[in-house]
Image (tube, rainbow, N blue to C red):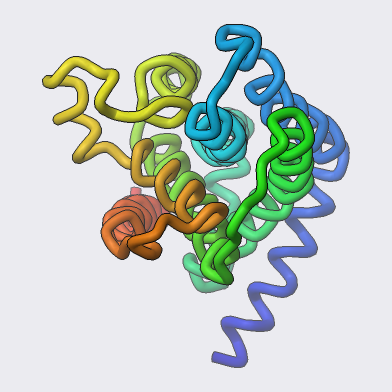
Length: 245
């Protein structure tokens, strides 16, 4: 454990130094995406009821997490594979999960400013009063970690040239065809059924129902499903990083 923690601390520092030039841009893009969803999508529904306003506000937070974890992060990994950094990482005498944890910590931290700004703008624009649960912190961490784990799993499993195509498809689905900014009952039955398996709807539900807790309490199902997706992404990534070529 001592070796793992020391490796994690050193890898976290290395990740921050390696990405220091890109981090400010990622912060701006992630924050802008979160704000854009709240403000821009509200133009589609000029008179939004409380439910719609809640979906737009928490949906903006979820889209921001997805954008960083499942779009930006895998694109960076694809670039590292092309530059040979991936092979260098595989040769390092450190635990693979410590390497993944260090990268995930950076991406989770990038998300935090955008989440706070989106929540504040949503509250001001729609005059919302939230019933926030303490579980919002583990919910955000789990959603962000699941997004990074899935994104890394895709980036490590497919060729770099395909990563851009897949990540573009992800953001299109998240913005327009997933029950993130609107309820699932607005989707066609077949698409709603598909989203019972995909993680997008559960990500939005975990954020939404911890930011504003429903009368029935915070459900367990989204956390369970996201934990499974997170474990699957980490398992794929760890397997590829430890596989001998």
